[in-house]
Length: 284
Image 1 (cartoon, rainbow, N blue to C red):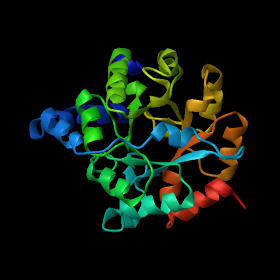
Image 2: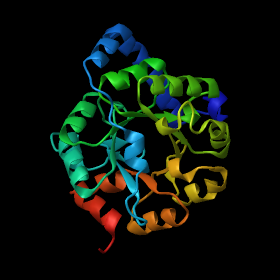
Image 3: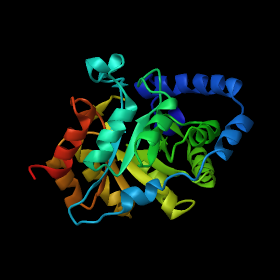
Image 4: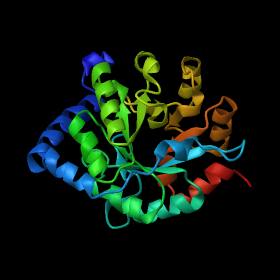
């Protein structure tokens, strides 16, 4: 992590990435790349994640990537019933679709977020929206794995990757017809990513600014706004985390940010679909 983030002390992100390396090695021993490619051969084309979130029918529209998330390192279990059978990704996916989500984000990390790779197909079967695999992707194996398990897009966190690793994963994602949401938080990471926005093909890459600092797990919505001057093409910009109200969407939209990834504030509600409607429509 010191190469990408410059922090030599242990952090939550460091711990997650260290565990993810072990997890990937186990996965490789259990399922070969040939097996994954055989799974891909049985699938159709991915749904177009990029098109789904960059299309706006109205001037007051924000495309929402609605997240399906059971727990987080900072908050623990998001709702008590999510510890058992009360967590059903398919039910949540249908609720989000009915409420007007443009796309879905599905946590697949098991240890820290309570996710599972099998959730992707369950979500995809439940709603006709493209699905982002949200995980800590650090190895080409995971990109192929994401496609094999039905993902239409993947998250690549710049703070977890060197520049060369990031570019290699972006190329592989493009070859597999996956959209890459390349996430940054700190300014150094954004400056590293900035020259590569639109690589290797414009319609396969989105730029994310995470309002949550993954080293401290603190969140500040204004973080996106402070970084805007470093973003050349706001049409592909996604503001992530810390978005809890319609007013937050209006504030972002007034500065040209028209895509938002929202998770915890929706998942805390008994009815995430109703929460999404309120977020998108305000008092209307």
